[in-house]
Each structure stands twice: as structure tokens, then as C-alpha cells.
Image 1 (cartoon, helix red, strand yellow):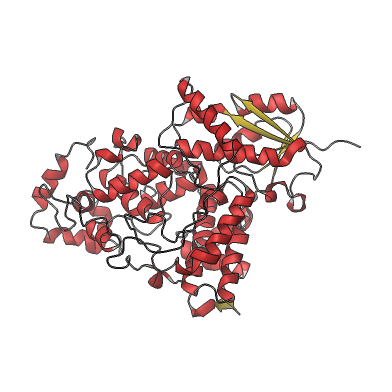
Image 2: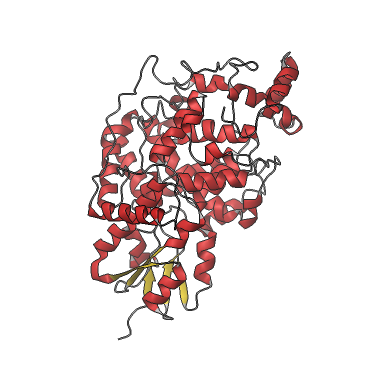
Length: 504
């Protein structure tokens, strides 16, 4: 009997679904190869906590697979594969990046198996997208299509509760005067000997000058095994989901995790499957353990947004990477690259940057409306901003960040993905957080020493792109508002004279 070809398991394909033979997967008796490539960490300066999480998860998975796996530590993937299988045949699940897919396709004898870890097959999304009449592909339409197709939160032919979208209920500011939301704490794993080994290796690489990281590492905050990921999912659904919805867009200085699930890194490592996450949330609603608005908000994040981003990454093609509709060319300043939160005076930006430095994570609103908004207002190169998010977040991968940052956050595609640029003045941050009160800057000031950098930056951005924004129904009012600013000349002089590399 011929032995089945070896199966290569990437470091973001760590759950059981990726070895399941029943959906086009590898042979059930196929030996498994895993390659730890040091070149990956040389090419980009990753967050130290991210490097630790990925390597810990890979080594934990190898330990689980036991004698079935050959785990190779090599300089490159090619070297590792040569050591593991020589020139023999190989199967591999469809990788999550174009670069990895190109590498796999260049290997003689390699066969690419269907993707796993997503709800919608790519060919079905392509058929849906091609059937939209050539217009913009909007997340809301896609989300409703996925809900129908997977019968998620449905009652007959319509949405549960009569509405598809519960955003109106899920955009409340934080409770007045509250330092914390008061949610039960999230699941946190216990480190093992594997974590200690990884940390020693990373220390050695840095000490020897082989690799350089940013940010801080330890203790590990996110799951590295399937068991830990399931425990995190259970903890969220049973204890935190009920309170998730109302304040999912809010920010609190003393409570950065609030009621968020913290499951994105587990999903993106393949430790959790999106179907089991949304089905668990729906089951909680049907059992009366969580309200519909919270469950819909969570389902939207996974079945709507995460799925949409994955599909657009492939559908838009490689040319999408060069998108720069706003002509932004600014270089990322050193304080940003180094996650130097202490150099920043603006309290909101300093707090969020410190959280990235310390944990490699923030929830979606600090990413979009603090970090992304600041980069957009300052006109930084969208490719560089996208790469920064990829490197500095524990859940950041090429497929995640290219549409999320280039498309949504930086509006570099000119509206192919979203209907408007997502940026605001300090009033939004003041309304949705407690971050502005003790700040040296005032959210209602556009000019002067205490002018909020987000408020001044917003109006400078609107002025810079006035022609484009006037033609967009969703931003035309803001563009017309420039005419009411009596201090606009002073504001523009102030912003033009700002040191491009200085922290606000």
C-alpha cells in the first residue's frame, strides 16, 4: 500500500479542521510537516508578543500531534521542507496569504487543498460578488446573504427580531462616571514549559542580533491551544456576551478589554472555527442567556466583517495592495514605529499605543478611530500603515490587514470597500470614551496650544481632500462645513507647520 503524501501545516492552520479528511483535506494517515522559519521574523519587525504566541501555538500543536508530525526549525520554509520531505509529494491547505500561496505553487509535487477556517467557499463569494452588477461590494449586503445562507439568527425567511442590523442599540457611550464596564474578566491562559522555551529562543535571537522585535512580551494573554481557545469561547459566551453589544464601540482608559471576546487571534490561528463561534452565540440567545443585540453584534463581527475581509483580500487581487487614492506618502515616524507611547501627549493616542506596546491588541474602535484615524489625518503611506498593523497586532495577518487598513481605515481604495473615510475630530472620542477629560488638549479646540490634534487634523484632512469629499453624499456636509470655520487659515498654517515626525 502506498503511503499518502506528507501534509504541510502552516502556523495559522492549527485546529482540527485543517487536518480533517472529509472536506477535501489530507489523507487521515498522512504524516504532518511543520516548519518554523526564522526568515519570517527577519523580514518584518514583529511585535514580540505576537512572535511568542505564534511559535508557542505551533510548538503546542506539534506536541499534540506527537509521532505523526515532523517539526523542523530552519532558516526558510524551503530549507525546512527539503529537510522534512526531500523532493517527495506534498499536500497543503490553501494558505492565507498570496505570498505563501505563491511559494506553495512553486513547489514541485505540491497539491493545494481547499481552504478551511471560513464560512463561505471562495467560488460562492465570487459568484455573489460578480452578481452585484459591478457596483461597490457592501458589507451589509454580504452579511445578510451569509445570514440567509447559513440560517444564522433567522426566523423563517427574515432576521430574528425583524431587523438585520442592531447597530443602533450597540453604539452607546460608556456609562457616565464609570472607570470600568464591570464585565466578568476574560479567559486568560496559564503558561507552560513550551512558553518558557519559546521565550528563551526569542531572547537568544535578539541577543545574537539575528532578529529584532517591538513591544513587550509576557505573560501570554491569548490561547495557544485548541483547549485554551475553547475555554476562551465558553468564557465569553457564558459570562461576557450578554453585555457585549451596547458598549462595543466605547472606550475606557481603565478597561481596555471591556466585554470584547478576545477571540480574534484564536480564529486567525485556526484554533477556533467561525461556525462554532456564531452557533454558540446564537444558542445562547435562543436559550435566553444573551440579548439579541449583543449576539447580533458578535455574529456580525465574524460572519459579516471577518468573512467579508477574507473574501475581498482574494477577490480584489494583488493590485489592491498598491491602492493610494488619496495620494498619501508620509513616512511613519519613529515614535509610532517603536510604540513609544510615553512620547505622546494626546491621552487617547498615548493610551491606545501603550496597549499595543504592552499586549499587541486593542479592540476595533481604538484601531479604527484612534490609530487609523490619526494615520489617515496625517497622510501616512497606506502601505506602511498596513504593514505596521500586520506586524504589531497578535491577530494581524496579510489577509486581515490589507482590506481592513488599506481599504477601510485609510480609504486608500477610494471607496471600493467603504462608503466614506473613517475619521473624526476629538468630539467623537470625547463622546465615546473617558480619554479626553485629563488630556492636555481640548476636543473642542482647533487652534492654539491646547488644540486637539484629532480635531485640527480632521479639518486639515477635510480641506486637503475637499474636492473628493464634496462629491460624496456621506461627507459633503463636512466639506461644506469648512466655509463656516473662521479660523481655517490659522488652522491650516498651524497644521502645515507641524513637525511631521513629532508626536502629538
